[in-house]
Amino acid sequence: MKSCLKISLKDITYNWKLINKASNGKAAAVIKANAYGMGMLEIAKALLDAGCSYFYVANINEAIKLRKKYNSTKISIAIFEGYLEGNQKLYNEYNLIPIINGLDQLIRLNKFAVEEAFPRAVLNIDTGMNRLGLNQEEKIFLIKNKDILKNIKLDFIMSHLANAHEREGKKNLIQLDKIKNFSTYFPDIKLSLANSGGIKLGSNFCLDQTRPGIAL
Image (tube, rainbow, N blue to C red; front, top):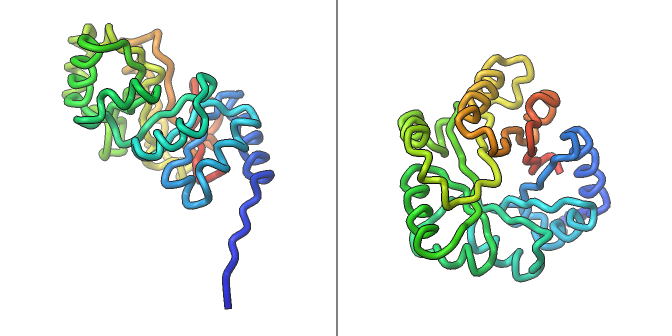
């Protein structure tokens, strides 16, 4: 006896279009872990054809695989695992976007930027998840040392909602306030906060980009 999982690219594309509409036309797509086991390359192609151009993957191996398949400036690929030592030149070679999860990674990227290039990145700050992202001390340091970003092009300042499933909870509003308050020090950088559950919290949470994943 066998089990068979049928994956409908048509349905996934339909889901993304609905989510993109709810996101004010600003939805990316999280296709980490081989698109949750459903086939990263196939799903990326379907979503790219539907109009999605910004993708989030788990690690640099997934990012390189995706870039080799779709080597186009139309597709942006951001990597959740961060900016790891030893991978510096690969980000440039494959036009990849590291997500900066801590001050050590930011300092390392700044050093590489000064020596080699003008890289793109996404800055992740902790607003309540308490897992990844610049902590309070690191955020204060960055506010006082903004020059560390002058050679880096930040696509977004992002954060992760810890309680997006709690639609009436106050914690979501606290996290929204925190990322907005931090952004007042960097007014020219776009913001990304809402994950799949966060999009359901309303347009206030959609900001400049949403990151649906499992909802697709």
